[in-house]
Image (cartoon, rainbow, N blue to C red; front, side):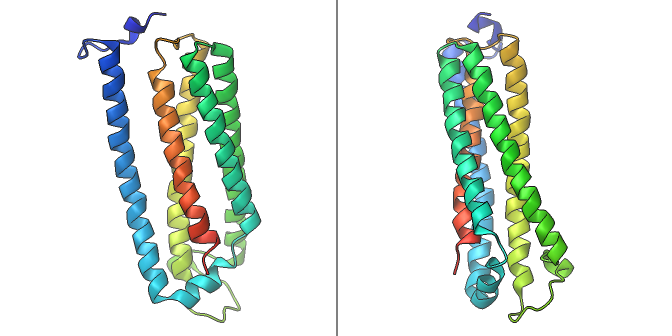
Length: 211
């Protein structure tokens, strides 16, 4: 299928459409960084006001699981890079294979996060007024878990959105929509996925390694 088949009427050339799409994606990602940046600042302010509570609370997190999830997302970034590279070379089977691998790794990440969440619910390590963990020696740990669930939950929603986009890419790849001359959607989804992974790279030490 030719590149011109996907040229929208308000663009004069495929190159112009590609650049406009790239700029649009970057603008969207800037708003995402600002969103998480605000949460990071709020976390830092509350941690500064209640250092002992935050330090005690983070010991309830499993560093090993957090590290495994970090490695899983780093691997998914690599497979996404390979998917974009395959799309640029017009290699449909490789593109499909790497998209499937990326999708599977994203599923592993969410699976591990599910087990983490299940443990927190079982122990009563919940945000705000729902916090019911027994035996705390330092009060105020509910504030840490308010930020924990807010930030990891929001990040998880971005993972789910990325998985949805990858399913869409797979559907289009199977129909042969992408060639070495037209791979814009793959490139833009790849950019989104790298930023989502990068946000976790900040979340992991912030939540799991403080203190």
